[in-house]
Image (cartoon, rainbow, N blue to C red):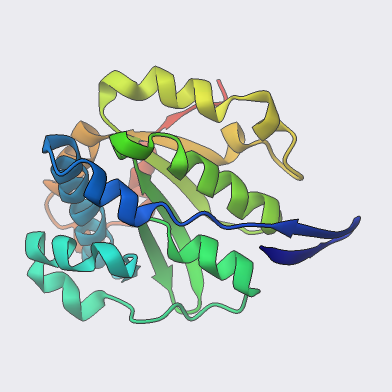
Length: 202
């Protein structure tokens, strides 16, 4: 457990570490597909000029998919947050960073821990409600409604600032593959994601 100071006092929180379980529990098609999507998101970010963060347990598998990613991969996060926030951020599937700030965070849905990514995003916003970062959940199109139902849970609407549904969007695996195939990504801004994302707030 870690202690976090909030304006209304100090609270004790724990940061679950479910990554190893995700990869080991189901070495089947779904996990392999999610690793490929994780690698694509990292590759797209690298082509757009971002530095990339991938959690250490996933790096070997992601680099196997995109060896060129090694040059853009960060060994440590250049962020100035408390340890609890950093541990939460370090477990996010893909981060795009410019300098010392995070531009976008992506959680790729793994079937063995279907809601862990959504919970991690909510944890991050609860710990740092003023954080200006775009959040995305990537999942197969068939699971879109399930993702939206989770993002819209009442508990996530109680987050300080904006509700999770107003801060977190859905990206289908197919739309990510489509974006990865766009020519001249290096000349595009990351705002191009707005053409592919779907909002849960509606």
